Length: 113
Length: 109
Image 1: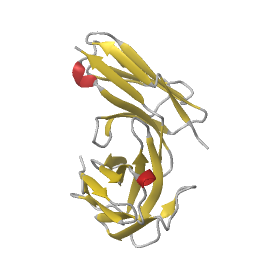
Image 2: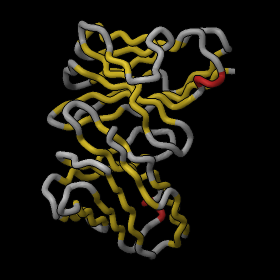
Image 3: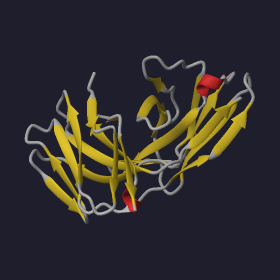
Image 4: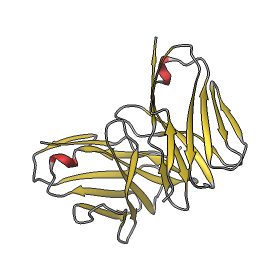
């Protein structure tokens, strides 16, 4: 199967700082990647769809200026949480579509102090 | 808005017991998927069901897709501690997945 990686796996930052999370498709090219957010013991909520070479499509209620998405190449999408606050603490998961199915990254645990 | 409801939300059982998890939708999906997620990791696809009435088996796991393609069930026979995890159903749309709220399964020895 296809492999999706995320970096970092875990990050702790101070309130007010920005954090960048990378999502890479390791052995395939992905024109579309997806960013999800997951609260403890809850399901995945789609935040946005990242499109290579164009603007991301955000779900209703997700602030595009707060969660900046850049999909600069066919193997890399980044999510930047700007001016992070404690309520942004969560598990962020990316996925990419390949061979007719979605493959998920291992997730990034963000803790904002 | 398409919604997927899963039940139960939490299930705690002893090793060797059987269990069933349900996924119900208010809409029809072209297909439905089941994922398993362990703490601190991303979801891993278990199965995709496409045809109404379809039954798929994966070792001790049996997946059913309702005739109307609006509901599905996951049955685990003789649960093992390694089955512990969050089970998510997801409806497959044109370009995205719609996830249910998940069922947290805890299997104790």
